[in-house]
Image (cartoon, rainbow, N blue to C red; front, side):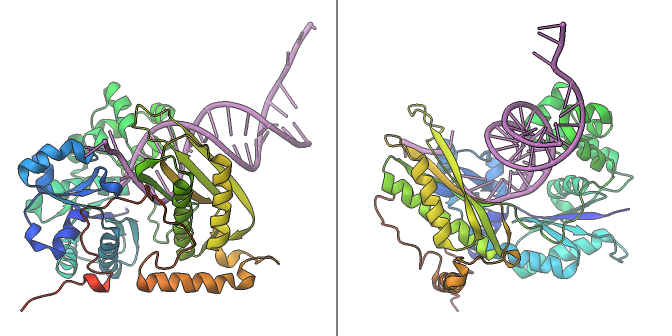
Length: 420
DNA sequence: TCTGGGGTCCTAGGACCC
DNA sequence: TCTGGGGTCCTAGGACCC
């Protein structure tokens, strides 16, 4: 019988902010998306006040002012680094683990020889908290889906020290109490459909007819049903599979109809995307670009355009990718339209080592060394210290970040000082 | 004034081939 | 009078995740 644990950091972004600003403890905090647009994370105090997840900032202004809520822009440099510290501790404790997201990790506890799984997890939890300052919850079950549900219980019952085990004896009671929409893999549409058919709880869904589920929800829904029955359909992926695509897309701070402005955005997104791809040791063969208007703006005629170019040789050279992105951009650009969002997608990825350099390949002409040098300089002096030519025009697209905390752990100037 | 970004997987439908 | 069937590949779009 398989045993999975899901370790989930509690209110992760808010917890990261608190580690370096302890006075924020017990205060309501919200973290904003890029451009300070909407609320993507909340501390438990902010949840209690009733600030909704995903709400645009302007709609929560009243609550924020009334309760003195602390507002922060997303600080991914900080969150990414804190995440790596947490994951390091987990992977040292358990050989088989899968980093599922920035704040979640599945553990394979199958071959763990300990007298009491719950106690062992409580120790692990204490270790993470002591070494990183991040509180976590741990849920344990026979499948990933069950460990997810167990994790919700672990969070809901803080008295139990943040650990909850779903055993074969307790599984029915747990599933009975779990609303169908809380099940991993059942989204808004799926839960609406199921509730319409009278399926309200995870238990009811578990006991549904296979054919009925297959017909209504496809193989994905069927897998979820099996996982609820304790039959693992999703294995632990301890070796991260190679990415099939990588991208950089952004909403602009303000809409822009200026060709140079939007072109600069595309250029910088292409450069960022190719940096990410190089970091993963990959090359791409297809470069796709899209630009579009603000879909929330009712006064704007909606417009969206997208096109792609297939390169002759797969590459990870910024110059080749940026040049391709700009050619695609020229094909899709239409004037007289106020654009609000753009993106560059790199597709058909493969491992850089597997690709034979062509005769006229940039990598032969010293491109590899040049890219390495650029990445090295940017790694040392900060992202964007060296970049391809772009005229800093109106720059309506540049991201708004008005409530950004320091990058405490990844930038020399931002290291916190302790007073004696 | 003001509504995120980065992914994966599945499905349906069309083109094309034998 | 009467318009096959099956396989593959590609693409677009949608659902879902965090």
